[in-house]
Structures are given as structure tokens and as C-alpha cells.
Length: 306
Image 1 (cartoon, rainbow, N blue to C red):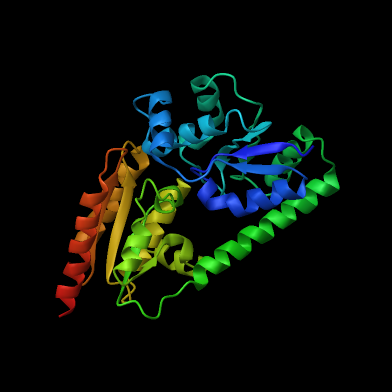
Image 2 (cartoon, rainbow, N blue to C red):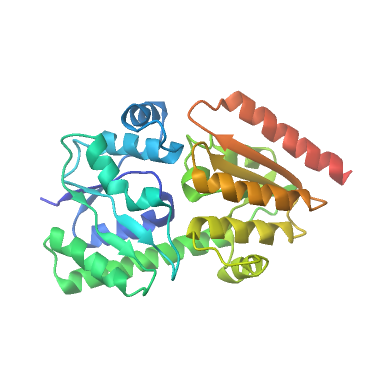
């Protein structure tokens, strides 16, 4: 029987899921996803998480709880760094431990460390550790890693090629993948904007060259990868005349977001010709209020263009 590997559909799932699914499938495992977020999942996570935890972590715990009795293993890597000389938010580093101490009677956790701050070849060691846990050989693991990389590359290419020639306006959404692409946290914000005749652009749709252009505007380098990506995307969108407005999404309780978000807001106030709005989301945010603010934002863009 194929081993069942559970992948919580939260946090870095929204960034790396194509690679993870292709990788484990090639290792003859059955990938079990926890499914789309919903009220039951977030309520479960809120009960399990400490009060000071941010919304994405609460949601992650709810997804783990949902998978608890459905799988043979849980895949929760300890992500330290994904870029040279940079770090990820501490919540990713301590995630496996947080899960273990928050939820009892869990299946074994595959918590291989991903630390690429000194050299990207460390990833080979990480995937081989996963192979050892699943009793898979070197060549099968190597092939699975290559297939995972290919799947992720194709996914990102599709994102960058997405266009809507019929859209009346183009709005950029600033935020982490695990907020933008989680339909429950974001309350389907992207789809709602599309229904209003808006083409949505996110940081994931930017080419590496475009991101470098944005990052060239920073006065000093940043060592927090996700915050650096947000700042680079923001500066690129600010200088792009095709962008009619920018919406920044932040999660309640996120320390890095509170700092980076404030820096982006200050930069936005220096700019003319682009509407800007920040939405801070938590488990109590109401959909009706969000729709009202989106409609007002699009109306403002329309009025400014008249």
C-alpha cells in the first residue's frame, strides 16, 4: 500500500505545492491535502494556537488537525532559509515543534530542515533525508526532486503568462501567497476583483528581472526573504504606469508585516496617480465589509481616471 503523506493546505503550501505533490507522487506516495480553508478549520486552529500566534499559523494548525487521522506521515519542513544570506520568518523555523506541542497523537512528522542561506546544494541533503524516512533510494529521490522542480517552474510560468485583455483596470495585490491565495483568509478577494472588471497582478506574477528592478530602489539590503519580496514588488508596482491601484493584504498578529507594511504605506503616500489601500485581515473580518471597501476602491480609481 502506498504511504499517505499529508500536506496541510496553508503557509508555504501556496508557494511550493506543485513541487511537493510531484515529488511525493514520484516517490510512490499518496498525497493527501487538507482541502480549502473554511470556518471549521480556522476555528479549530484558534483553539489550538497560543493567543499571540498570527492568523496564518492558527490556520495551519487547523489544517494539521484535519489531517491528523487520515495519513501515515505529515510533511511539515523546518524552513530556515530559501535564499542566499537571507532568512524566513521564525514561525516557519519552529513550525514542526509548534505543531507537536499543540496537537496530541499525531502521525510521524517529516520535518527535514531546509536551509539554503549558505548554499543551495543543501537542498539535496534535505530531500535525501525525506527519502530515508520513506525508504526510497538515491536515484528515485533525485528523479522526484527534478520532477518537483519542473512542476514548480511550469506553475510559475503559467502565473506570469496570465493576462486579461478585457479588464478595465489593473490592480496589484501585495501580500504573501498564503494570504492572497487562501480563499478563506482573503475571502476570494482576487475573484471578487475580477468580477468587477479588474485584472489582478500579484508579486508571484513578476519576472525575476522585474523583481530586481523593484529591489534596486531599496536603500539597503533586507535579510527577511518574504519582507524583501514585498518591498521589491511594491517599488516595481509604484513605478509601473499600467498599475491603476495597489491593495496591500496583511495578517493580524504578523510582526514582520506590521513593519514592512508601514514602510510600504509611507512610500505610497509619496506617490501620485495610484490608489492605495491596506486591508488587515483576521478570523473576524466580515465579507460584506470587504466587498464594500473593494467597490469603493474601484470606484475611486474610476473617478480619478475621469
